[in-house]
Image (tube, rainbow, N blue to C red; front, side, top):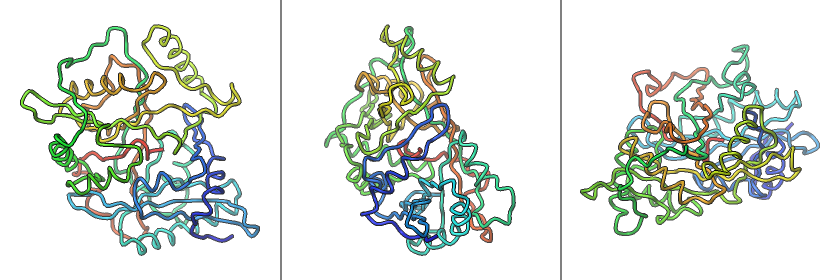
Length: 376
């Protein structure tokens, strides 16, 4: 088998191979990137590599991508690699070959992009992946060591209880524009310094990130102001469109019951329904996410008021999705909302012979920034 770096002309084959794998959890899903495999990476960075493992007949047997971004980590701006979209076929030879290539690939990524740290996000419901990588059965396998850095919940918001009330109905919430962008940048910058892996630390980094983010404009920001015209919260709802579709193939019994409850609540205007699974319709229809990016608030009431506004502005078939680091209590699911959550972990991958960095010390209690679009 041969390991090589993917080229733009490999995009279609990579998309088809990637789509052939299912994400297991309460909802079994497949991911469709509509022929452009590299589109989600270009939103994050220009610096990304995808490795593909092919057999002697050029059949694709495995892929793994690495995206390098400048982030705030332990109070300093530094390049950090993020491992994404590892998919290996069930071919035993492919599995063994990839395990032998993993550490050399890490070294190559570090050398190519001049970075020293690699992170990855894993779903805590992906038991097979956790057993294979996080809890290897023998330390003799040539794999990096996984260290838990932070836990977070991916929260999906599907509706409101009939007795729900906006905690701050008179809060001033305005769209982003040229008149308030300086105050917005200052607020995001101050909040970002309280998180590790943040991608905004000044005005230039904000504009660079916004320019890269396809379909997201300054006017999409919802900005909350207090009585003194100080920014006290913000969020930027965004739909991925056809860039990346999550297609539900089958619901577990618990998820099926939740979907039926949402159908019932929808008749009274309380909830929004979930897409029917492929196993029912035999049609591949994606879930309608509205991602909550740049989510910051000074307290829980402001956060919930932003949630109200974003939910009202979303289409009738869309539900909201955001990430909540477990230490950030103000972003916990409001009790008056109908929602669900899935647990995830941010892992630090280290070479077996390298010392661990100081930011992994338990004394570091900062939360982390993980955009919901890049968690799955």
